[in-house]
Amino acid sequence: MIPLADIHCHLLAGLDDGPRTRDDAVAMCRMAHAEGVRLMAATAHQNERWRLSPEQIRQAAGQLHDDLRNAGVEVSVFPCAEVMAEPDTLAAWHEGRLLSMAGRGQYLLLEMPRGVCVDLIPTVRDLREAGLRPILAHPEREAELLHDPGRIEALIEAGSLVQVSSESVTSPKSREDARRLRSWFRRGIVHAAGSDGHSPRRRQPRLAAAYEQVVRWAGSAAADRIFSTNGMAILHGLPLDPPRPTPARQALWFLPRFLVSG
Image (cartoon, rainbow, N blue to C red):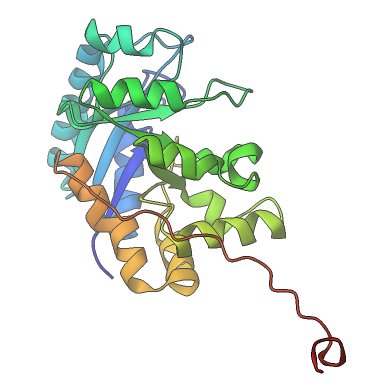
């Protein structure tokens, strides 16, 4: 299997609701390594509850890097933040209060405000004008985005990328959710994957089973892009220019032959 890249995993001990200890963080990376993961976004929340600074996240990621080297775990970690969209997101970026993916100033992992689905198109456009490419964190969890035709496509058209969480693939809430998500992968709506891991015991950093499911849904080439090469590009600050999603297939209705024959 191709080396995997996890672009959304809460690995920084004691900063948010991720691992409690540094040993737990190392255990998570060891678990991910056993699944074939070689690059991981060491992600911390930046929202109304955890007002973490970019420097706090960088320092914690640096400590994790040292811990992994001492433990012999060959996983590369990158300091990252999961930024909750707020009215002042653009101002917070200009003021240096937000951390981009790996601190490279190219991509920003952006999530919906908790418990509500808002129109993020103006925020996405503002960030694009500021030189950032937003990546929507697990938008499949929002019923409006997963099931309402055209909503996720409009966000992609505005300039956003889409990250889906592995648990949504392996344990969808319903058959309809699974069907819609399969369509997303087949149509090119999903650009990257993350485990959204939080602990070695709960919400573990698992990607391999989701990768295999996407191979079955959309083929190995799509799975390799989403779970590996696109994630590597994002963490290294390289440009991504994915094609537009293909249109959703429309149901075909056929009249009985005796009604159309003359």
